[in-house]
Image 1 (cartoon, helix red, strand yellow):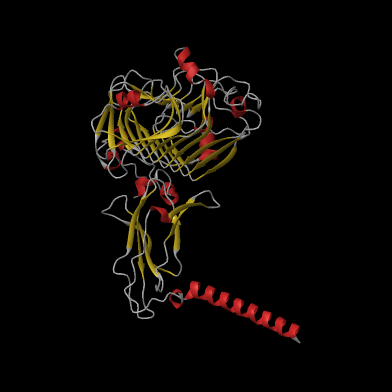
Image 2 (cartoon, helix red, strand yellow):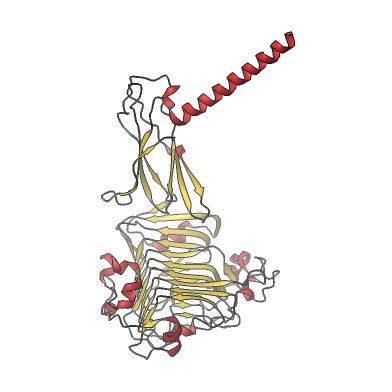
Length: 496
């Protein structure tokens, strides 16, 4: 009998524990004030600080911000607002007056963006009223940077302050709206560097006769306008290392195809590889008289090269190819992307290419990266190319192997010659929505049959130099052709 009582008593205790747990769970999720002990009160302001933010990686590779705040006892929920405030006078709502039951929200994380966040505790139960003020915080996704003083010579500052090599990314910021000079070659050496301006008020760098950028490692340039008018000594705005002496070669010894292990994977070419991305984003360039990217006739390859959101105004009547790795025994760009950009030339040019390598056979990815990494990609999406170049093939000496994927979507090629020399038959091709016209030369039959619809846009501003102080450089490349307009082809900025 005694044993039966003990069993019964044990069972009742277990039931009581289960009931208690269930009531706690319901109270936390649905009625926080049930167990808060807070009534007839003005609720506390939610405490928001840097520790409330974390980053989540999404399944598609993008990132989200998770905002989590401490419980405000007695709250019947929270009103949450999140706005992008890169331009404080024009905030952009991300989350607007959203009523949240729990204590967290997530939103998409964008690069180089400032978010204003506010969280208000809501009353409405047990006589509680809303908090008098919302908890507020400005959250930034900018990487912390060192400010280069206004009016400084960029090359002088970089050459005096950068070490020969560093494993840490170094970020330098230019003051919004300020003007800088570059009267000699800014050598970033073996340093991974980001050089950025202000999204809403771009800085201007005026490159002098002997100026230019030289890189041997990952490099990003953002939100800067560059005047190349006076630049004459260097053969490229962005040059890859000249490797002029033994010290230069020794400095780059860690990035040879041998040292990086590519030779052990089957690569059969000597050379140097910049593995980290080289990205030019939201920058405008005025009067580029020679190459935009130049390999200095050395065996350089880039794993990832991207130009996005840029206007590049060429003033090129000579033989300098725009993206130029010609003159060495090998060298290539493994993954090459131009997106949402405009390239135009105020000169007629029948002597230069847009992209040129030295040797089509050695421009195969496997020759540099080995048999385990034979793929390559070219991506041209939503760009406007005008007169680049009018009478020379669009590309020269690119590889013809089937391991390369070519994506060419919604571009405008105005007075541009022989795109077919870039898009080879062996490539895995994904081509749609492009238009092309020939004014100086007749459109190539392969181009019009396979890669683009023949349509004249009638651009007239190709003859204008950029005004780096004006919105979109003070030029207009709005399409007029029906096919381009229907597909929203070309650089998206011209539709705004």
